[in-house]
Image 1 (cartoon, rainbow, N blue to C red):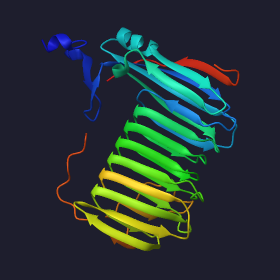
Image 2 (cartoon, rainbow, N blue to C red; image 1 turned 180 degrees about the vertical axis):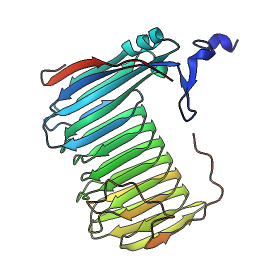
Image 3 (cartoon, helix red, strand yellow; image 1 turned 120 degrees about the horizontal axis):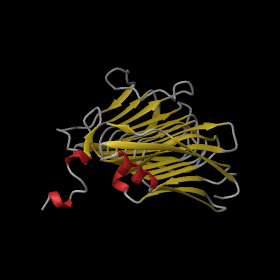
Length: 306
């Protein structure tokens, strides 16, 4: 009976180079290019799974490449999935949205990459996939289930809520107002702040440690909570409140300068810490695990097998 529920036979399952199981032995890929002038509106990317890699640039248009991926047990099956992936655009005075949908969501994915106006505000609401944003000065909102988030050279409020994955956010400058939330159910949080920044930090982990590196906090309050801890502190004077929340993971607050905001978060074992706060940590719990102002062009790439 169980075999009758499968879409196809055993050949429908394959593995990546590192052993991750995926549906479909053949992957068919094409790239759809789109461009839009947000003209002050937030740019919204929503739907399906897939990575997002965007860089801020001194330009007025968002130039995006949507890499559509369809998988199947044959090239024909993969092509059928790919043809069922749609990219719908809709614009209002409040925002401009790209909505990604598929007839067979389990076999479909879309990676998004490109450049956006440096001042653009972004909202990303997807099922899963890594997110990397670099050099975007506008407000960022990220909401998805699975995948790491890496934001570099931020200069406006950032909100990120994910279920599984690490969060890394480094500010070039912290806005004077606009409270923020960085939250993951299972994963570590790394927050980079300039030493001259002003912000109220409210950090809590249910299972893990809290560390500070190179920042001079005042009005500190530290309370161990079961296998984790809560830490409240003030950096500078005034500023927004930044909430950091993880159920299962550690939190690091570190000093950054404009020259090092694009670097990866340092590992505590190799980077000296000027002030480290440790919370008791038993054996870690298992982690759960077309509108007139747009342009478009389509290009097709070859199918791949794995």
